[in-house]
Length: 157
Figure (cartoon, one colour):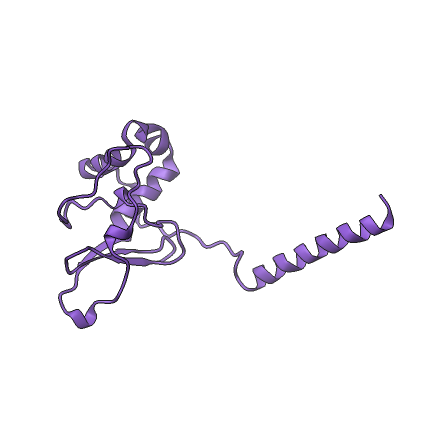
């Protein structure tokens, strides 16, 4: 390897190192701890199990139940991070994407269908391809209703 190749490689490594340091300085590479409430330690209840089974089908055990951390993450979603609010005062309603704009999470159960009518007590957020692992929170409006679905960031306290 001649000197020009060595200088070229050294230059690339230097640029990459400086870029990594700048990103770290800006906080882009800092790890943030996920916040879990104590309720994620409790076993799944029947409703939660049914919600998982509706989405993962015969892959439920392999993908979720046999993986302790993944199960904890899903329980955290179902128990702590999805909030459904009815906001009847139009001045308090904020523009946001509609639930109908969110793709179904039908990777494991091909015949998965959207609910014909929205029921906040039986809504299964796992059926939708929400960005559950973002650092941000998101809000969606249920089409034709005053209901809003808030997906809280896993990093919020």
